[in-house]
Image (cartoon, rainbow, N blue to C red; front, side):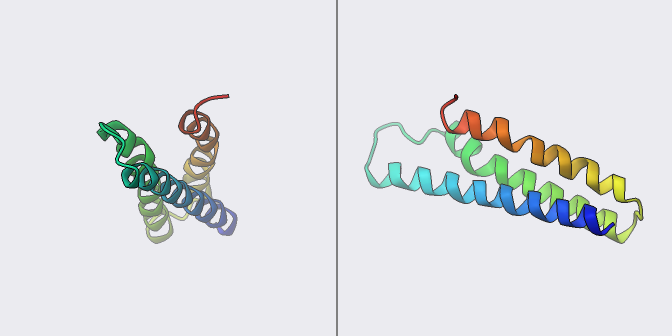
Length: 96
């Protein structure tokens, strides 16, 4: 269970870091008074999506540690969240 907890913690920290980066990128645009920007979609994709993934994984880790004693039940979603970081960065960063 220790390895699964470490994997979950790394994924949570990385997704929270992506939320902070999204917030910082949107704050710069807000200061410059760009018209019609940021849109609701950019706010959702830049801040809400990473926060939702981190919160869902944190809740799942709490449930797995409290009630389930199977490491794979936490390790599998943690690895999937880590694997989802690369496509998210490619899309958020503007592509390849």
